[in-house]
Image (cartoon, rainbow, N blue to C red):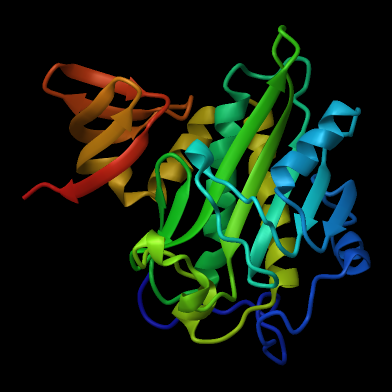
Length: 288
């Protein structure tokens, strides 16, 4: 993206809100998400341990596809490897959606949901910021080197396949730099820090859910190739970079050459081409 940021009227409030000055309202969310299949039931909590845990609770008691859990604050928000996700009250968007795959769901539906969530976040915030938004495999989102969002997809199985999935999203919206744990090394960032003004969390959340709905339907249809292509278009490090990925087997290094329809990162290593399904990108840089 070049030039001035494109600002959507939907996403910019008429009067910018101070952080925490105006909370989300359940009735407003239900009204504006009435046509969204991923908000058939909306739970809004002032404070929970983890929205993913709350959505899993709903799944275990028969909750329907599209049950949405939103929290103003999380006390035990988490990302991959049980890392803490700072979730101060009124600062960001913290949500989880309960997803029940169809009986004939593609075997890589869960991987598709993970790609879909990253794409949806990127498409939601790109119109707001003057700098490129970059997805980093497998599910983080950065802007000017600051980590803006993360995705955590968890599933439960009956032994015959996934019974349900929970797609958790954390998006930093109105936090200030001092709201982030110093242990993060200054990598945490928010939309407010980049744009210089508070953002309307309600409008962002609504746009995000409709974007997620569109891409979840692509995953539901089994079109992993379309998801992979869109993900790569938003992820500069996924192609043409010297890349180090931490896996259970250790550090793998090679040149990134894309993402598969199953969500695996493709690396061309000295030992041959590898498709990494589970791992964490530690470093990526352009070859000279």
